[in-house]
Image (tube, rainbow, N blue to C red):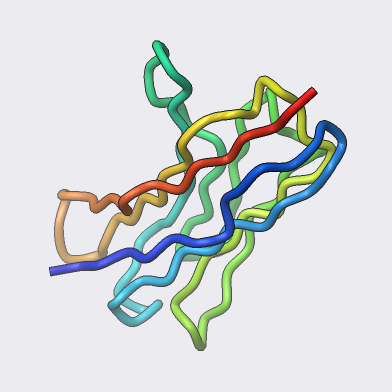
Length: 117
């Protein structure tokens, strides 16, 4: 069973920064991809950013140039650096992991990010 532990959410003013972390309970070498999704109240969950086993990254258009996804192999951890935050970035952010051994993916419990205007 894969466990994902997220941290780093909180309240920040518009224009500020936050860094989210997601630590996986499996070796980084067992991971096909990891990513971040978010869900705002009354909206569907949407992709924010992903990073593949080979290091390729993908971002939602709404966060390009402001958010950066990265990883630490030794810690099996993925990060989301969020800069120039906007009120519309307010959401619960979820970590997502796809292992190499299964088509099933795994989700973290979510961390709240609130950006005040």
